[in-house]
Image 1 (cartoon, rainbow, N blue to C red):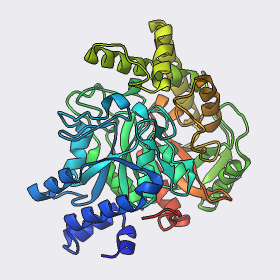
Image 2: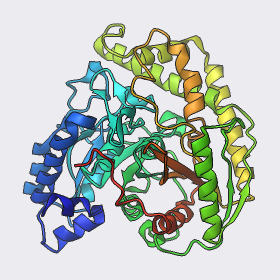
Image 3: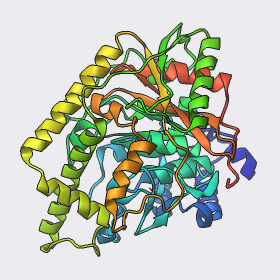
Length: 474
């Protein structure tokens, strides 16, 4: 295989090459590793390497599964026994997992060869990936800009064609934000669609879930087929899908009723180029036969305050557990200033404040449920500004108070679907005048990934993106 041939295939395509014995899993692994080395100095997407683990997988025999032999990266927040996971934190730079997470086990059972971990900001807290421990992960379209976060390493690796699909997770937009920034496809599933165990039943009060970023819609659908479903310790489960998610790809979406907005959830103006792109996509949808109408939900509470309260409380718990484990107070030698500052804010709050935040999340969810009685899909910008420049969000700053207003302008709408649990996707349908991707966000009713996948497949044909590659490409 030549380099060009490898990059032309999505993950299902590579798996078919393995299945038909045109290529071996080891050849694919060697190619992925070579591509990692080729672009790592430019983008810094892969921060933990364990090719030996992937080679042992191959030597021990891979399962006969949908993605047999396809190289894969796990996000540096999840665990595989015997491999290093740092959580992006200095304190855990040498931590080796003593067990495998449920989601990682399902990736392994899908036949993927997991050769490393992709970069994440410390504990996945920021919409950019430039932590102190590993340094910045740069955008393959322009290395002066962020790859997004918190799954920034995954999106950068897929965009640069190190591999066609990679693990990602989303607690406030962390699949969709980097998908938008890097020009790849990213679907956040319905709450509880994928497992969080065995160490916890839910992430960030039910806001967080795991899936992938990919270059094709069908890869995302097939991966969801491979990993979805509850585990014995799941506190609740998502609605059972009517059919396989892969079967939705190529299925006619019908005439959908689509509402859209080119403003923030607060009704504020956004970057003019992104606003124009939203309207252009609205016209594209009309041309595809859908009913399109400009209308946005009226929210019953401020999502920024909700996400701040929930994330800071969970961060405080993480810092507290680390202090218990190591028998000392955590300092800025252990964690970044933003992590410690977030934990400090949570300690100043009360248990009542946390309950109020969850109640407000419910009110937002109810507002969205009522809104979706009138439409099938809501189109909005994934990001309200182009991908920020490296250094714009500094987690070691002495002026951390400058970050929340910046986030409110940058990605104010992604967390809504985390609060409501609805499926939501970022689709790479636009690019800025200076060549940066501008993802479009589509959200559906709770449990309705099917409609999103049908629409995404239709858009993938109408405005293809797979063969559009960035300047930094393996």
